[in-house]
Length: 190
Image (cartoon, rainbow, N blue to C red; front, side, top):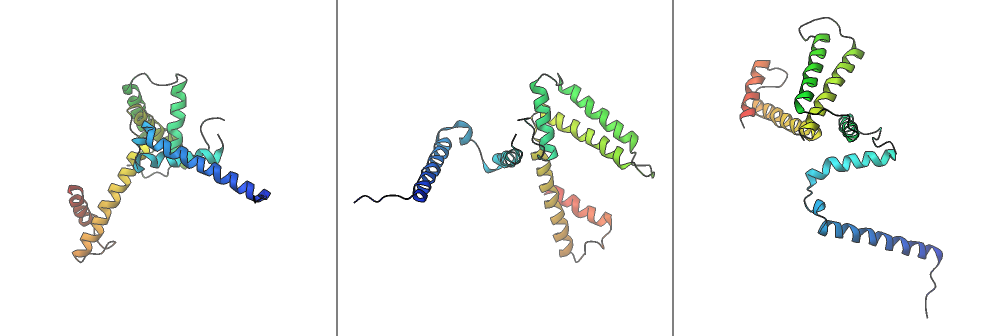
């Protein structure tokens, strides 16, 4: 005797079939797609983050508003390049970086004790960062990955400073900058 499936059972069964099909497609892609084969957890890290933000914004315009600023700068610059609005040579991009650095330095000289206009400072610093991201894109460096590597390097060196100074009976916050710098220089040599 054949069991008659109720409507909820049919719905569940169709969902299970659809999920099974999704898993099958994913398995096939991992086994047969050359792009998928060469991906690692590290290479997928920034792609996954970007895709998550894209999903949250439901894209037509192409650059989701909720992307982190660094990733968004890369995407904006890629879109501009796609329509021909780009530098011709990397030297031109580097000149722009230097120009933005000079503008920032002129407005916010580190040697001056004058109070800064925060809005102006944000704008100038943003221009500098945008031009640096553009140069990185131009020479095929992922600025997000570069910054993350520097973050990790700094953390590793700072942890060395903390642990090694503690071994020597010194306390963070009570050491001079010169003392801390000596540990920092040792950490750099590791």
